Length: 435
Figure 1: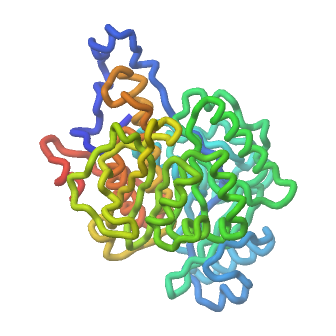
Figure 2: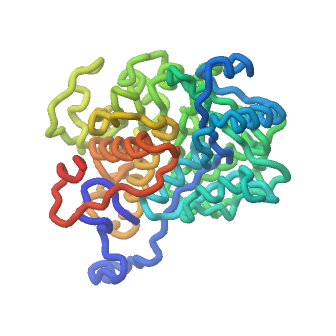
Figure 3: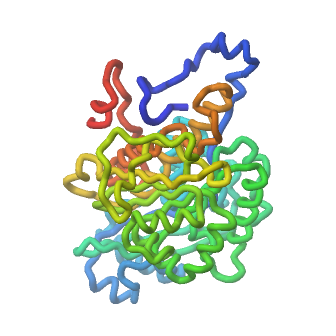
């Protein structure tokens, strides 16, 4: 596994030879395995630049996400194709994007649970999905279905607003019996999205999601929920608060979704409120940057060496050098927050914001997996005196997530097409992150 954060080179541990010190402890390095599991609606993203009139003609709520019939999707696709309005077509899906990015960053395995068309022809949605997914993402457990997977049209109007039209196809056909128990045995975490519970009546996806959550929690595997869009949360905020409190350990959202969930428009206050439901919160806030909130024990909190920041919570980043823990694992829990402004002030030209939040989440998954990986290989390390959720400090996770998110903003694809630059020998930390 490649290690995130403050590392001198791409591998923190030797990968070809056994460590003689670890041999004495009886730790078998070659048996150390870890992976991330995700449940997703398998779909293809179709990005198009369209006039306002097209949004109105198809009666799509501007800026919202709407499920449309398959017949209407065919008509829309043909019109976009004929008018040469399509910018790109890539494999998509919130969790699919996140797992692809994780595997690219960590050079490590992930397992995707979902559906895939049993018959795949060149040029179809299924073909595009498979060809745009990292080979490190294990697709062996996908459930075959008779019919197409989903298509998500991201329709961008001249004012920059994105309107989503989703053709579900068979993407919600995942059955509970298609969720294998064994994939959770060595998992670092389970990642799901709010979209999985927003299906039409009779779809088996919610039941399959519930089984995945149950299997993960039975094994002590952290469950991560990404909120999707503000419209999904605004429909049933009370339901989501109760669901998160009962089932979720870590929450990923943007500032709009945070407001729909908590009622606070300020992302910092939204993060603080969300800590009443989850142990850790990642919040991307556009031009404001990125926030991370969580708990640590009072005995192991660490003060920052960076300037203290103003905000709705004065000097909120005082303990950002701390590593987050679950609230239940803390003897005396303390809320800790971290923030980072957009990398390099943000790109001069944003190609697409689609997938930027998924990229930030992938960086967090990488750090969490690195923590489990290191704990398995060096169990007596001082890094593991407590049951921390991440390998790095909250401040460092923010930097890493911010950098990965930037990489997606400057490209067309919602998925990383390459990893981050490797650190050169002798390059100090500040110089590396300034690349």
